[in-house]
Image (tube, rainbow, N blue to C red):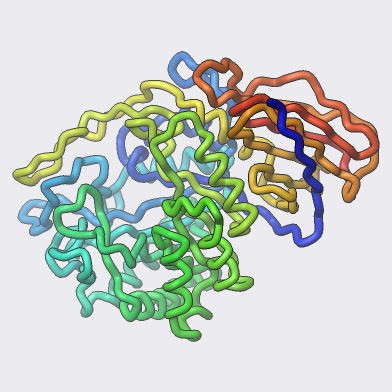
Length: 467
């Protein structure tokens, strides 16, 4: 059965797009962080050979760097969770006694490769304070997930530590962090000493104290232009609750709200509430991931975010990961933790295959470029954007049901008769199109009618659109 629909593309209320990005932990903590082909595929726009696959470069322009929490110096008192594996432990730059600026070589290598491939916005985020600042010496969390694990006496030193690394990155690495994020899902009760990754719970009062110290430390390090993002909560609901509870003086120090997309929120009430709660404060969707390889869930989440949350950026958590969580399938040597303590693994890794969602994401990242304006499409499943520099209008539609014919009303932008360049990806396993160029679709007097096959992602791109 063919469903029919009409969507009016409206530039009223449009907002500016910062871009698309990814985090470097944990994949770039392995030897994958040294690979030129992965840097080119993720951050460039050319076609790249990754193994035997020719992939369209995604052109991600935002990189989130994970500031580490672990050291292994002789005599170190760091405590390791019995559930953690080696690639999920990020090496830090200080053991409390001395600085080691040669640490974390793989992530730092990918930082510069990403920059050279085209990335231009960098953010540093902390998952846990360095282990020696924690209550129990364990960067996976306190003994109980409801307990803060940053020692009260180290709140200011933690902020100074973040600022010192940001200054070092600017002066020695050639990387200017535009923003820093001192927390990662701080309201969750999941960060405890037996967790399978690093993490740290922060009460509201601890968050407020660290944010105040951090602004002061950044300014003292000559980094007054570096923004503070917070609080990187796991769910939209948590982010709204945290923002409402923060004091007004703390809110004034926060330049952007970061939030993760692990709340499915299909009716978009939580996204809408967060957008309303933070008002005009900019938002980034700073971490998204799931274990569905076909990419449809990701596409639907992007559409819901951009229509109801109105973030300025969308960030993938793990582009190379096992069990279908990645855009690319990551194969690592540390899949089994060590219950007796002492994380297993040697930071080796390889790419085992390409998930369809790599090609799905290409529809968005390659065609909706930074500084574009996100327009109202009239529907969650269609993302519309206009690039004033290239005069290009882009429509990306996710059709997660039966075949559907959609008429796009473009008359608020153009009444011309022209052609729309077309790309399609089939998310069904029976389909073979993977970001495949299809014949142009004709626009007649500003009206564009397209029949979308079932379970497809379609990009339509129109040139010479100057509203």
